[in-house]
Length: 373
Image 1: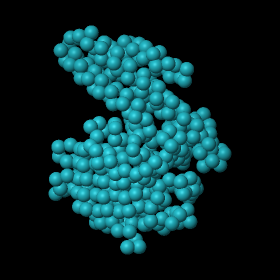
Image 2: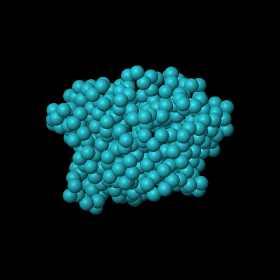
Image 3: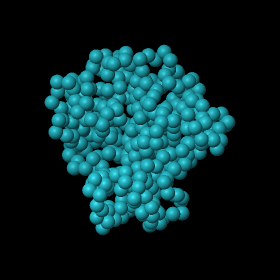
Image 4: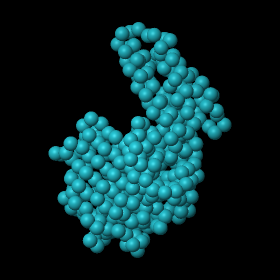
């Protein structure tokens, strides 16, 4: 899978821009605040129909523009097709092969991307919400089934939380209505838990040997899904649902007192261990970075395993954050295999021998131009 070209209209600081990309490595080169990260973000938006930098789509529309449009052609082993995202004050439209998609879940997954930015190094040491977002964004691309159950879970969770707040305010509970919401939440929660557990197990299988290689056989990485209820491979969904219902029942009075749902997949976490020690608590900064890098490289292979296509890799100013050994391992891992986009202010600190014939684009003041042009 690769992104053949990209056209921007009214996007951030780009009034109008277009580029044709290499199937291998593409470099966005320029000073800070010129639009390199905006260009990278637009590719992410084309894939995910949302930004990784802001939850407010209006911020993506240029200062004096009525709308923003991102268009690109995707090439896969079975053929190519265009994708298009149009953002306006009224909302967003997502088009697949020129046809508007009524549900974003039908759009997401046609261009798979993996983003690696400096903030992703906080995947390990950041808050649990960072890791839940990581799970949801990556799994949502690979599995339409997971995305469907996640959307349903979040919708019912919102309804349930609103009702808990309302019941707390009125000091009166309609137990039948609350039970209906709780049953629905537990059913969708069991689906989400099942898929997350399977994904974590497969991610561990890919990440462990990668981490061992980067650490020169000195460290063994283990990844665990930390749930508010025990989850293991032999459990069926019905049992998980019952366990969730039991947890909700146990917490009901506290939830009514606090006006929110206190357990479930929206409160879960991932844990990382190196040689059986928790990396989040006891790992050095180097170990935390190696773990994050191992997970990102494992994602590439896992995405190929699950979809039959390698994803597009977005490296947003991350090479400068990696030492020589980690940088070498990253660039060798993707060489001639994954279409890669990287942003940098200079190629001086990048191992050029590991960049196989890169296509370089100079970015300046909202303008993008291929270096050989």
